[in-house]
Amino acid sequence: MVVSASIIPVACALASELHAPQTEAEKKVAEILKLDNSITNPFSLFYFLTAYESSPRDKYYTTLFTPSFLAFVRNENQKELNVNCDGKYIEGDECGLEIEPVICSNDISDFYLYHTYRQTENEAIISAFWPNANITEPNSTYRLLKVHGHWMLDATFCSDSGKFNWDNDKSHN
Image (cartoon, rainbow, N blue to C red; front, side, top):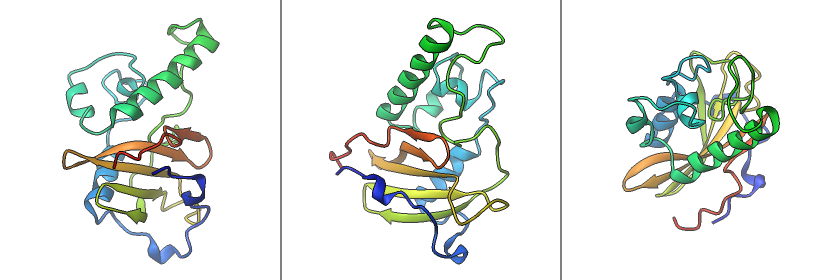
């Protein structure tokens, strides 16, 4: 199944449809969004996603994301490195991705509200909203796939800053 851009919510019909995480898939998104996404902490999720430095947390992080998502993010980061810094990190320069590919922002909210647009046995499309912002539009939308009985983040659609792995075909569900 290819998830087309038409599934991407432009606006949520009613703020009353938003809630704290309830389903297992929503709880997985909430778990991921609570991780340290700092671009300055070498043990953070951002460093893992961009393959900048490895850390002891990497084993846990690999259980949260599909290999397809990780490969896509790392490829996009490498493209930015090639364009901005001749293919390698330069201390003090912004060389790779300029936006965190999971939270879709350089800012972090203390908590999010959720809305599941569609969920099947093996796929879920969930948006996260900043409750203190314009809650008629999601900050980000996620595609999760159930792999070996566990939900894994497979794609992110950032409302203001692009998409990561969103166009890849997931017909193996």
